[in-house]
Amino acid sequence: MTAVPGNRWDLLPEPSGPVPTVGVVVCHYEQPEQLARTVAAVHRQTRPPVAVVVADDGSARPPDPATLAGPVPLQVLGQDDRGFRAAAARNLGAARCDGDVLVFLDADTVPEPGFIDALTRRIRACPDVLAVGRRRHADLSGTEPGTDPARAPRLPEPRWLADGYRGSRDLLDADGRSFRFVISAVLALHRTLFDDIGGFDERFVGYGGEDWDLAYRAWNNGALLVHEPGAVAWHDGPDWAGRPGPGKDGEAMRLAALVPEPGTRGAPLPGAVPDVLADPGPGLTGTALVRTVDSVLRQTHRDVRVRLPGGDDRITELYRGVADTAPWSADRVRRARARLEVHAPLPPDALATAMDLMVRHDLGRVEIVGAGHDRLAVLGAARAAGRARRHGVGGAEAQWREGTATLRVDDRTGG
Image (cartoon, rainbow, N blue to C red; front, side):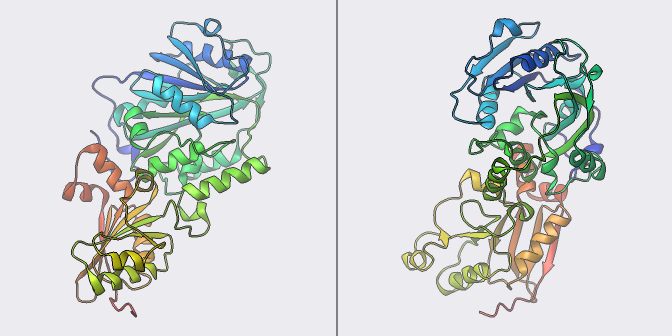
């Protein structure tokens, strides 16, 4: 298993060893002519996939597999029409699609012949890679299946995407907000990464957001984000991303509820999905536990949730409604940017300072120590934990790969 620091996909070696198989999932709804062009292009890839699944999101007349037949085995799977449910459709397709690597296309997005080969190149070197291709735009109306889409009348590429890729050097300089430049119309990742982060979140209903959410969880769990400009697919029509309306409002609100990254959320919402999950250290009881929990609840970084140790009904009653007693859910663990183990009361700005240090330097661990060099807390990054989980490493080796720091604070808490 290849590991690199940060998002340094440029340090990945050339692929070697067995070549992983590729399966393609095409998300579709009421687009028969566009689907025919896209599937025809998938059948003509220089690196053919082993399977194609058309995931139909409730079309009145589902696609006929016979009309889409070609050299690659193909099946059509459908779900009931209960609104725009692209996330659920893609999960349905992924669950039934053969292949070590999953490539996602939209039915209106026609790949060039070398698309799959270019998009999956770095995934062959490292299964931690989430790759996004280059989506170009053209008027493909009237273009016959099998015709080169680059010959159709061209339309402008989305400026926001082009600027994002240029400014980040094709995501080499990605940070915690770069998930906004990952779009599911031209997306690929290893099945092990897809399963580890839980696939697409089916709570996204309505246009947009499910791809950014997937990319956020991938980044937050240690994936490498890569833009592959040589993996070109042509979208039929202009970019929709800038369109206003209630659909975009719903997308923004759903992202804010599920993505605790501050720029997305806008304000602390320490409810269902907190940014930081805090656990008192083992052995804290009574007054020491109360003072420690109180210090976490007084942090200037407000998007934090505390889990109480069991065994003391008085503590549970004291913090009812503002702290948890149940184990953290898998959803919270995948989405929180950090876990905090706190051993003693913290100054009010300690967590905010430690989070800033962790995010700015992409650290795996920040130790918070007091003026007397006593360890007050340990902040662990979800990115480091995700990589350690998939790579099967831990302890000093995992910390060395991701980087550690010590934050010295005045341990007077005012409480």
